[in-house]
Amino acid sequence: MFCPHCGVQIRDNLSSCPRCGKDLVDKELDNSEKLSKIARILGLLDEQGKGKDWMVEEMKKAKLKLDIDKNTNSYEILKSCPMVLFHIYLGS
Image 1: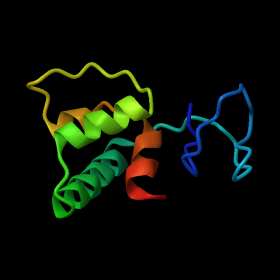
Image 2 (image 1 turned 120 degrees about the horizontal axis):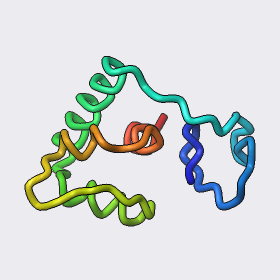
Image 3 (image 1 turned 120 degrees about the vertical axis):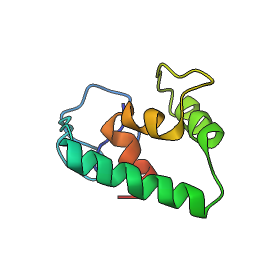
Image 4 (image 1 turned 180 degrees about the horizontal axis):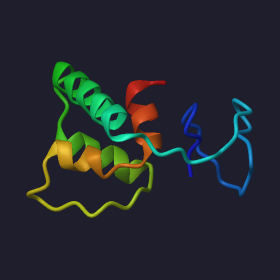
């Protein structure tokens, strides 16, 4: 589990993050906010020359299990991601 605010990995069942002190409550993004974040991430990845393979490797490092096959594109991967990855990718 990761803090949705600062991205630090949480190993215990805590109610607040040991780094930033914020509540560890999963807030779902509304559709337009999520699409906006996906667009920002895709733009950043394009600028940095990173793509689908890089995203998949980062998810493996974060030990996230998503249903991804060879034909899944970057947008579909991000659309299925939990909110914490948006914070990690965007550095927020």
